Image (cartoon, rainbow, N blue to C red; front, side, top):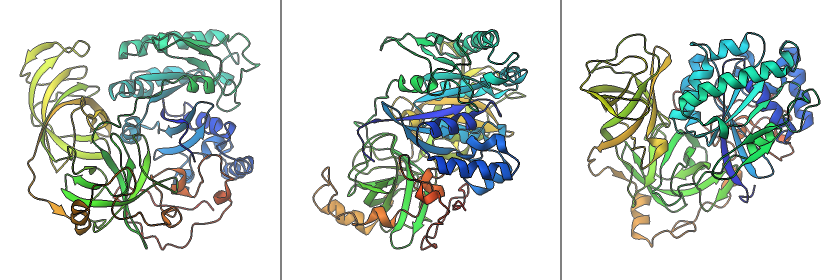
Length: 531
C-alpha cells in the first residue's frame, strides 16, 4: 500500500442507533473497501441472526462477541480510499457505557462526522439533555477535533419520506448547538442521507431533488458538493508534526512467537525508525527498535498518524503496557508526571466537585485515577478569564484551573507541546463528567532506569540514519508479523485484509494456529477469526 495519498483519520459520532455503523459500512462498501461477495456473506449472516437491518453495520462489527450482542463495542478501524485521501474511519460506539472508547478514538481524529437521525422523535432524543449528540459534539471539539461534517441520516423515515421541511428544521437546530460549542456552521457541510438506502452517499439522490448541495466557506478556500463522499474529500489535511520529538502511546503489547515483544500504537508526533533507541515512560525502560511495520509491510520510518507495530528486543510483555508512551531516548524522552496543571470543563456531574476528588482520567491510551489536589481558579469557559481564586467547589457548566496528581505512574504532556497527550476526559459513574487540557506538567526526575543490552550496543554504534540503523531489521517481518493485529479492532485484528484487497482472508480461512501467544492488556479484545 503506497504512501502517495495523505492519511486522514475520521471519527464517526452521534447518538445510539443514529445509524453510524450502517452509514459507515455502506460508505466503505460503496468505496470498494470491501468486495461484494463479502457483503453478501454478511447479509446472509445478519439475516440468519434476525438482524437484517444491521447488514452494513456488520461490516464493522467483525468480532464475534460484538456480532452476537448487536452493538459496536470497541472502536473499529477501517480503511478505504477517496480520490484525494487514504481514510481511516473510526466507528465510535454510541452507547453511554462506551464513551471512554469514543474519547480514545476521538483523540486520533482529524475530522468528526456527526450522524443525527431525522426519524420522527429520533432527532429529539439524540439532541435532548441526556442524548449523546450534544455530548459527542462537545467532546470532539474540546479534544481538538476542529473539522466537522454533519450527516442528517434516515431521511427515508421522515414523515413524509425525504422531507425538506424536516431536514431544514434539523440543520437549524444542530447549527445553533455546534455554534455554541465553538464550531463555525459556515465551515460545516450538512448532508441529508440514508445510510441504509445509500441516498447522497456517493452521488446525488433522486429522492431529494430539492437538495441543491452543501457549501462551506473558509479561509483555506470554499468548497461545495452534494454527497457525503465529496464532503470527506474537502477535509483540510492536517499538518503532521514530524519535526517534534517522538511520542507514541501504546495501545497494546503482544508477544509473538519467533519475533518477541511487539508494542502497537499510533505515532502522534515525530518519526519512528528501525535502529532507534527508545525510552518507554513511565516505566523508564530504554531499548532498541528492531523493525517497524504497518499493514503487514516493513517500514523504514513511521510518521504521525501511522498505526504501527514495532519489535523491541530484551523487553518482556510484562515490562510495558497499554498507556505507556514511547519516545526517542536522545530527544526529549518521555517521563513520568509527578503532577500537572489543567484547564477542565465540568460537563455533567450531579453534585459538587471539591479538592480531593479522584476520578479516572482517560488521556491518550492511559486510564488512570487522578486526584484533583487543588482547585486554583474558576474561569470563564469561553474567554478563559479568571472569575474566582481558590473556589471551594465546581459544578456542571463550570470551567477551572486544577492541579492534578496521578494515583499511579502516568505519562502526560502539555497540550501546547504534544496535543494528543495533553487532552483528557474525566470519567465517573460510568459517564464523562468533565474534559480538559493540560497546561503544564511537573515531571518526576527518574533514576537511571533499565537500559537493555541491545540499547547499549546501539548507543555505542554509529547513530541510526534515516534507514534501518546498526542492527538490520529482520528480513521477513511482513510475513512473520502478519498474525497479530497491529491495532486492536483494525482489519488485521480480525482476519480482514485492508482496502483494495481481494478479501481472501475473509473467506473463512482462520489464521494459522497460534505460534502467536498474545498477552493482551486487561482491556484487550480476543482475536477471533471470522468463520
